[in-house]
Structure formats: structure tokens, C-alpha cells
Length: 606
Ligand code: F6R
Image (cartoon, rainbow, N blue to C red; front, side, top):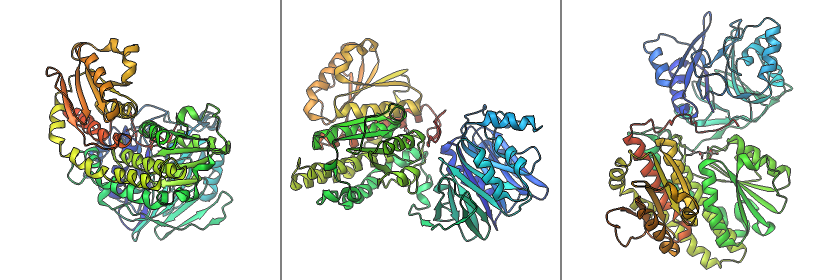
């Protein structure tokens, strides 16, 4: 979490950094700050609150510089406050730093420096970095950065400026993302590509322990022994518009509406990666016949995509699948070996727990396959095999389009594996693929119902608690519906397997409880309808998302229709309704949908 940016070039760094921070705000938004290289030291402006509070402070500012760094914070150590905001400057005022990550040994370092008479002003872990850098500095910033990183424990992406080395910006990272952008007018460091897209699509992905030294004329890379390293820039295919709101009230709504297109793009790419008709070559030579079981591990919504996929893989491939929260998997001494395929699902490719889960799996000899949206991210690079989702940049904190893209990759993979294992004939596999290919068009018909869903959602802001139920794969997607609602609308919600209600949960249902029931699984239509009757007879109101309904149960049952599709792929349709429902509940409550409280999009700390 936290977003960092830095610029050195021929243009004024101030507006470039502030605009770049806007694109990184999804990473943290409890305070923000900038430091510009000035004639007499650094000009530092830091402000508690969202970026707009910093912008207000800077309004009418005449500050100008060819170099600067900026930061948008998601507090871990020390409350959100002006003083705890970044950039942090050492007490001599010589070195300024922005940091994303956590310094785990900061207490020891702080104690050592305090004994040497250095005064700290903030409660953050990050302040030890500029203090340590000033302590080590003896005229060579590259050398100082090596010494500092040798002393630091934990994770970091760092940008440094030193008063004694004008025109030089230095960056280094460990376990947190950092890209280097190169443009005609200057060079950048940033936590993520959208921050620099308006200036360049040429980026270098920094690896752990590599050091980048940027001037306005170029970038040089070094290893920890200060030997030069040769790197090749990559060309980002994301358009500038893809990271702009483009007239939509929120990124989340824009991203929901983009789903037919990104599903089409992702399905096409997934199918081209030769799952069908040559599934033996799936995912770069990966052969499912080599595995006894699959493990899918991920966090949050990506985990929910994994739960959906478990139903699909098990039904089509008849191979056991375990789905594990990455934060649990990493510490459970998992039973995996070289005959296990561990699938990591992650939009950002930088989620700390998912990275740790991947490394744990690899250390036990398992083969890893990642499904990732961000090119060059840690998980995309470190996994043995990688499939990309083509969702483009996802800015809203609550994921929508990346989730949909993950689902279609997982479905396509499952079909390819099933054909390879002889559980589906190539013709049956082709038929399945055609069903998957029909999803974007069917999604469009759901998006056409937006007005009706909005109207219904606007009446739901009164609820204190909302339950989501489904059976089998509908239960899996109910979990995603519940997560989406709670994270952006702050309404308590839980997802339950429909059949489980009577084992305890139904006691929570009372007059006017709202239950959202999902019925994409035609086979189990009668079962979910029984559950609906059970809750309605106890006073609940129900929103039913399914293919058809028999009656409106005395006005207690509202209905949103989703088109028919093979039940295994129906979560892709029900989730569109669930996303729109959550979005409009939150919108009608007037909440800051793209930046829900306490959340950041990319959870790069544990
Ligand atoms: C929910 C959401 C989060 C992420 C989770 C994993 O809307 O966005 O739950 O799904 O933090 O993030 P990635 O996919 O980047 O690993």
C-alpha cells in the first residue's frame, strides 16, 4: 500500500507529481505529500486527508523544480497526520525519502540512531530511512543506498533525493512494486504504470535489490555491489484513456461497464494460448496430467474467483481442488509437492500474502501458475507459468473487471485441462468454449437493466444487514456479492450456502431482513426456491437473481433476470448484477465508492 512517484526532467515536477499521485490514490488516501528539490534544500508540503486536501494546500503555489518526489499514504505505523505523512526528511535536512512498505526492524534502528543523538519527529517506521541515509552519507548516494538497504529489514519501494546531488533521483525496492518510466522530457519512478502513462509507455520493471539512478537524461541500473546492470524497457499497451474516469461518476461504474470488452479480450487471449484444441500445450507447456491435485490460493475477491473455479475444475476435470486463503496457506505447512499445481490469482500481482504463498509452494517443489493482471508484477514474474488477464488498469479499490477476467481465464483453463485429461472430447471442449465466448454478449444484456437495478438498490440503503445465499457455484458467487457490498457500502453482510441456513443462520432472519438469493444453477432451482420460501415465511424480503421465477411471493420477491448459460459459467452473469447492486447502494448513500474507508487496492504489506 501507499503510492510513490518521483520525477526528474525538464518540466516543472510539481504538477507532474500531483497528477501522478491522483493515479496512485487507490493505494492509500489518508494523507499525502511532496518534496521538491529547491535552491536551499527541500520544499516539503504534507497534508493529512485525501489528495484533494494536499491540492488545496498547494493551490496557487509558485513552487517549481526540475525534480521531486510524492507519496499517498495508507497508514501502518503512526496515525494519519501531517507529521507522519511522507516524504520524510532526515534531521540534517539533506536527504528526503518516500517509502512504500514496512520496515520491520525500525525500532532497533531508531534506538541505535537515537543513541547517536539523532532526533525523530514522526511515529513512522519510514523515518529511519532518511535518518540512516544521512548518518551513512559520505558524498556518494549510490553507496549510501546500498548501506541503507543492507540495514533495513522488511519490505520497501523507496525514492531518494539528496541535497548534495542535484539532478539525481535514486530508487530501490524489495517486495514492493516499483517501475521506472522514461520519457522525452524526463524520467520517473512510480508504484504503478497509470501514474506515468500520460507521459510514457516505456517502462522498466525494477527487480528486488536493483538500484535505479535517474537523471533528466537517462537511467542507470546497479546491483548491490554497485556493478552496472543492463535492463530492457518494456512497452505498456494500456491506453492513456484506460486510466481516466472519462465522464463516469466513479471508476467502479466505468470498470463495471467495461466488462463485456475485457471479457472478450481475455477470452480471446486465453483461447489463443492453446488450451484448445491443443490443450497439452496449455499455459506454456504446462501439462495437467502431471498433477494429482490443484490448489488455488489468493486473497479477497481473487480468492472468491478461486472458489468459483473449484466447482468448475472439479466438475469438468474430476481432479481434486483445494482453495486456500493465501494468508492461511503461507503458514499452514501446506501439503503440496511436485505433483501439485498451485494456481495464484491476483489482479495486482503484488499482494504480500499471495507472494508469500507462491514462494512457500515453490519451496515445497510445487509447480506454480499465476493468473495476473499487471504485467511485470512480482507474481507474474516469479511463478513458473503465467496467464495474463487483459482487464487493463483497474483503479477502483473494489475489483470488478479484473475479477470477471480472472473467471474467464479460469473457465478456459478448466476446459483445456478437461480435454487434455480426456474428461471432455475436443468437440465438447469446443462447445464449452463457445459458451464462455457467449458471456460478453450476455453481460451486455444485463448492463441494459442498469436502471431497474439502480432503482431497486436505492431502496436498500435502509438495511443494516444483508444476507447473500446460493447453492454450489451460486454460493461461491454469493461470497463475492457479500464482499462487494460490505466493502463499499459499509452495510454488514454475510454469504451462506442456502442449505446451511437451517443449521443456525436462519435465526438471524426477521421481519424485513433482506436476502439476496442467487439462482444461476438451474439444476438446483427448486432447492434455492425452498430456501427463499423459508426466509420469506420468517418475514424476509428477497432479491432473486436467476433465469426465471414462478411468482413474486406476495410482493416479497423482487427479481433480476440473467440470461441462460451453462451453470458453471453463470457466476460471470450473476456477479454483474451483484456489482451494480452494491455500487448503487453505496452511491445512494453518497459514499466515496472508489476509495472505501480503511481499504487500499494493492495490499503489499502483511
Ligand atoms: C475486493 C478486492 C480485494 C482484492 C484482494 C486481492 O474488491 O479488490 O479483496 O481482491 O486484495 O488483491 P489482488 O487481486 O491484487 O491480489
